[in-house]
Image (cartoon, rainbow, N blue to C red; front, side, top):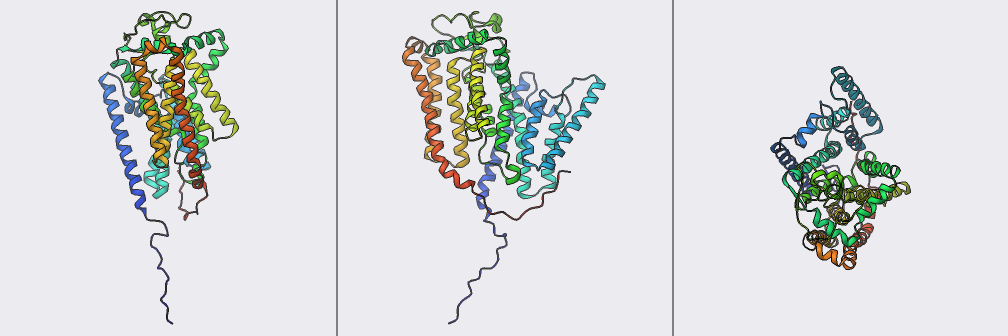
Length: 455
């Protein structure tokens, strides 16, 4: 009996699956790029309206002029280098230092402002240029992602500065009396912790200032720990700390415009000068009364509600849970120390911190759900966090007197509201883990592509 051959002719695509599934992802990246560019242009225009440079101009100036923050630029370079081999990293770091030395000598000879970091920015831009001109396919995409991540870290910082300027220029009245009244429900923790920090000076204050100021460095270290295998695997993980950090910094200042608050050290302390309601913080609790908006200066940022330092520290803590013991300990330490510093220095009220925790976990849940694919659990978790966050803001604005008068009921309710989001986040993300585990299995290696060196 004659049989028909079943041999399948060789595929011309090298055995790889069709690329139709990549089209939505490419369209998503393109849309995100357009939205981000439009957002930065809008902030640039807003800053120009108030007579200052915007984020795009500030970042472009640092190609030649003295940067505002050299460590920030080198942190961006470190994120870019996660896609490079060790030899390429040494070349990139050496080039950055060499360029900075040249800039330093020129500035020293010309008597200009002295700072470093230009070399790091030049190398990141150089990586982007190499990706466009000398890379192809997945290698080009990977290197562009690395350069984009480094530039976004710097742009996020510049964007935050512009946002704070807009809050002080457009929100002349602040709502601190409302928040201070609502904070009675929690026992006025800023006043309590403020007295504790003052009692431990100078040691306690110096330690907390160091921790508070170096939160971005701690986040960069945890982010680099999560991205340590990118060079070997030639791909980024679907979700990592830096993504959530950037989104929190992007969305948080928008809430500042809705709920402008300057903090107890300004509204009730010596740092507020003649604009302070009274010189009370941290020794005397604000007296009860009917809260009202109060005018404030055009310089102090309205950056309290929610506490983004709390949000970032919470995200750092969450992402450190799956690391080794040292990283877990560092994440816990930074969370506790940041919460203590935000209250002890009078930068935030207790209700700001609760809002910051809810805000952080909601954004983190949305980022994780977006990375793995939205399902019912992810939608419910994000909707729950968003609802709780909105209810908190409304309660602080509409019911502060009732919260202060019924503190034994309002205080536990605030804590339970935040705890419900924490519990929902833990339960949902744990349920996602078994589904995510198979994705960690090693995949069959694809045909190796040549990877030319940077130089």
